[in-house]
Amino acid sequence: NIESKYSLLILKENDTEAFEYLKTVYYNFNEKTTIKDLSEFIRSTEDYNKKLREKIISINSDNYVDSKIKQDLYYKQMTIEYFLNYSKLKRGVLKIELEDFKGAIIDLDDALNYFIKIKSSEVIAKCYMMKGYALLFSNNKEGACRNFSKAGEYGIDNAYDEIKRNCK
Image 1 (tube, rainbow, N blue to C red):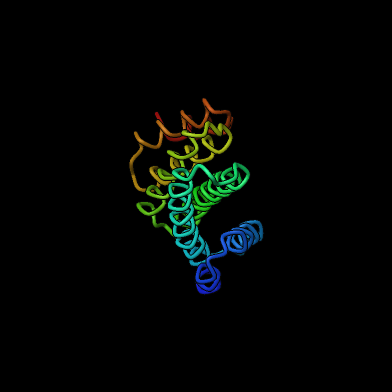
Image 2 (cartoon, helix red, strand yellow):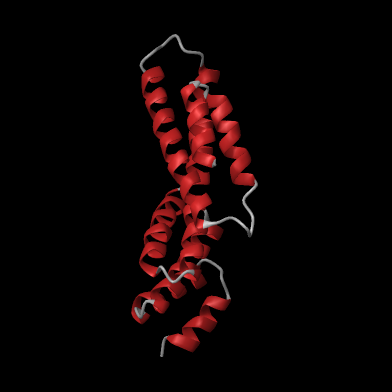
């Protein structure tokens, strides 16, 4: 169980061990990963990220903290935020498969906002494409077509096939 193992690490207050554990879990996700697995990972990662932010705020006010320690914490936070949001993209795709289109759109919007912020074009394209499908399957053709168009602008060629097929 991801959450209970992670909780034990947090109790130790060892952010490096917790970070390495979350990183290992993230890299071991595969096609057998379930929504439950992703949801537990997302909850644990959100909690860890909150603790990292609190730690960063507290050390920023301390002029005597080594800059390498600060860099390490910033690196961990950036990595965890990426894992968190990419996991939301994955969970959004699984929710589409389970016909939870509203839940999928929420996860995909969260992921999309993050990846737009960090300018990750390839992942932005995937988010738009998947959100397009979620909207299409929930009978929001207009929204689906806008998202397919954006996916095409970001480089997904088959997005234009979806527009031809669904947006007339």
